[in-house]
Image 1 (cartoon, rainbow, N blue to C red):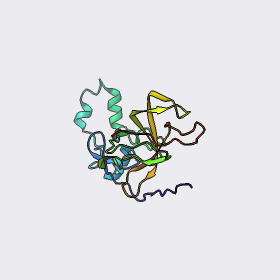
Image 2: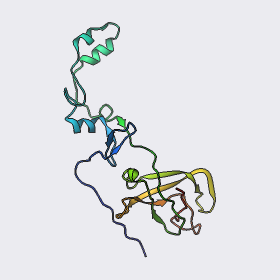
Image 3: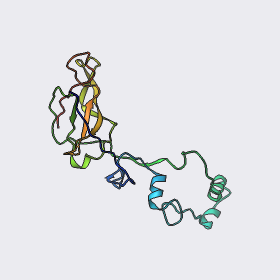
Image 4: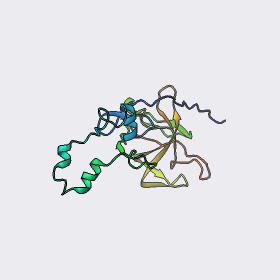
Length: 189
């Protein structure tokens, strides 16, 4: 019998709920922190908001003959473009490591709830992959351990009671070599 999985889809504006690498509450679940998203949240890129666009004339005149390109750049007018290069570079990123607070026992189930510390539960997003560096993955036959190649987990949804991610092993053990899905591997705390 197939398992039924309920996936909750959020709506509305994203609200920063977790800290990034700098320790600032800047991470909205499932979204990158870019200049344009931060500017949109603070009123845009204009004087008094994210970036001061006014140029100090004293700064502009300081050795302008030595830095001609810089002088031109400071006085250049704003032109709208269709390229995301200028507005969408990354200024912060989510933490990349998570901590499990309970060991996972090996079983024959295809998916399982990954128990994470409370501060890490909202970091992994649905349909993303996680690497478990201290657990070796398996070859495609599901029997041969591949030392040095980490176990990979695929996030399929959220557990409604604990809010922990529900995951499947991508390169985990299999009961039979011909099985379509891997079984639950043992993961130590």
